Length: 402
Length: 226
Image (cartoon, rainbow over all chains, first blue to last red; front, side, top):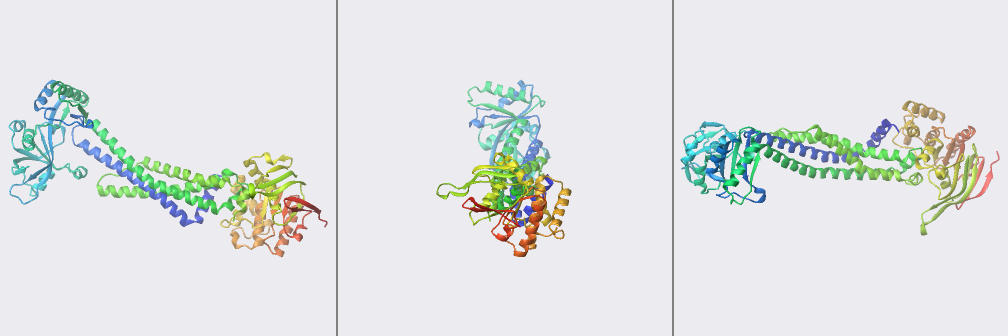
């Protein structure tokens, strides 16, 4: 049988029950649309997240902490402020190294104000952090090493946080209470433009000298260190040197010092978000599976209805493989048309959501090809049983059917 | 030439076992017109189905032009049905959603003929059965006699040597029946072998020989004298 004949018969046969075909196609379209939309949104979000994190700071950045995967947490003896200077002195690979003592949900409020306090993320550190993170100061200045040494009660507010506390834009030089400790605003950074990081409330930072943070939080624990290596190639060396020195200086710390370059961090985030996209995509694929069951159901109905026709076709010379091919072609055609609509719906949905969320949708050629491949596979898989059933009839038996 | 030896067909097993044919042996010469008669359930349709390779016998052998068809595989049988046999059924078995022309073209589709050749041969056949003016019609819009003529055109389109007809006039009135039989007589005169199952004695008399079936066996044979 010629391919053109197969195609023509397939279209003619499906056109007999238009509504039935359309509903089956809809089932597949929904499944494919779900998969495409989820994967496109996931990949788009991943790309945005990675690019924003990348923009956040130096590509030479690295981070030293303890092995949280083993449930370890730093204590006051894990990292010491004195270690920093020694590492910078001893390792030629390390250019900057900033200790970070952070506090979550730290309330900041204006004095004599009825306004609700704002919950912020307090970052106690040293000026070295400005080399690690992009912290462009919009007005005023970042605190200095002298501020750190003198335990000065000064604070640098993130632009977003400053806007909430001082809507008039006159934050500079004003007083705020950080957990009821008065401090002077000496600088405001530029507002984070990122919606995504904003949604994760990563834009409510308050930066203070680490010595001041120790007073506010009443702790000597340094949670982690963020550093910058002299070159990108020197990052592994910088990490290795830092860890070696920490181990030597605190042999009884009882923790595993670990370091991660920014590159590794990005790769890890990419991997994690990729796996999440895959999992959500797999859930969406269940919709496709349901659509496939619909195809199988409708093909079984078609085989039953057309048993006599199968007998006649065999009587005039159709081979078993012609019959198999015919019913398979119908199932696959349903799925491919469904796939085409699904790609349209899915890409449209992804586009709409991406517009809403302000991130670029990623409907890649691969996603579309994969979806089509999937649709064809669903058609073959769910069409095979009904088709082979039709092909297995004996012609005389099939002709006896009503 | 058709030759069967010890042909048997059994359906089901156990208490549901039905013997449709038991130990039938006979010959049908090339170009012969044979009518098969007998009451319902006498095995005459089963006999015709086996001759047309629509089903396989349970036992016995069936030689078509000296070739043992019981040794052929499914694809070879499909090829035989396509090229050697033309089937005509009591209920016509036309595909209602396809035009008359498409219905007649269908055997050529499975034979792999080109669209141009198919159209030409199908048109010639339909003109021959007097339906050249009905090519685009859908079968349900035609009368019974016209539908059966479409079915005959379809049976003839691959120029088969053997026409197998299962009560071809069973659903037709007397006038149409005799028109169809006139067509069969023409085919017989062209040298085609015809095996026709029928209930009606006056239809059977168009044949040259009548086989009487009873309980799955040929009980009587009669030569028709003109």
